[in-house]
Image 1 (cartoon, rainbow over the protein chains, first blue to last red):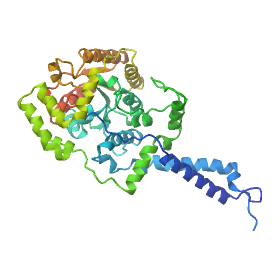
Image 2 (image 1 turned 135 degrees about the vertical axis):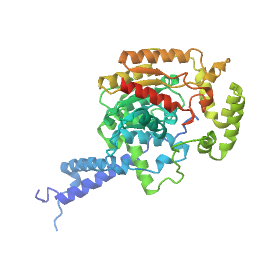
Image 3 (image 1 turned 90 degrees about the vertical axis):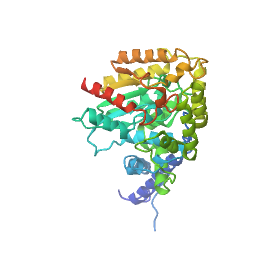
Length: 43
Length: 379
């Protein structure tokens, strides 16, 4: 894809997309959620 | 130098980001990053026990071992079967009884699991091409324990799909959550992936795998209770010398107060399930699902402690509950064409760890269970 004033370069797109993907992954992995640490009371 | 237009505003950037996100997710959830051995699964920290067992069950069905060509006997249930039929002592029984048929045992029991967890887990066992699926169910397992936080991690990672299961989620948020878990494995496994990544950076240090074999009750209590093991063993031996219900509860008061409280609470719950109860519907969904997919299965109603017959005050059981639920299980299994083995009266009181659980290995339960599995596989 040719780059120009109206169209970002492939390298810029890939770098920006990778940044977004890493942020999304980190948010999903470390997002606050339920605490699954609990003591089973059967013993 | 002339700058191009900002990449952030390009649709192509967002499409590429989506592709990268999926690729990174696959790089985590389909590799050893998530499914490789971890220290956390052998943690002695009891707060991590249920998490670790759920993680192992998820690994078994989502990333089955490719290098073991033995057909698996898959055990589903909770702590009753987790303790009573470890692979290290059930596999030798099966090897003895079926010498021409190499089998392994995948014990996917999860402490505290009830039919709400077991039913969705059962939807995934096809991936293992099991020789037999054994659904080990206690009569109290069709009624949820209100002290177990819901939804459990097991429900989150195994209850997938675009359509509702036998007991539909309550609201739009639950639907959205399930759809997201179904479509996006990284979202489904996020707690496990986080724990696995953190464990690879800083491995759990308080680890000790559950022993493959036990030769004495003292060894069991030493593992389960650590420094208090000798005290629990002494109380247990006092009960063995004078096997009364009072001495048994005195032993549990020392060794298993939480269990004692659970059993007392259960006995006070007046509700006896019927054919329309959610637990029964989930059991039926599990069994009919396995049957429709031609997965060989059998139900084992797990042993119950005969000491309960001495419970004249009904402090630890509801009269009639066990028979009523066993009847429901049998009728439900009959509708699905599934064999039921009623093992409630198999074991004497001195083979029990408490009211619900058998002594691991020492009880000998694995021998009778192995015989039943062998019989089912031959018929």
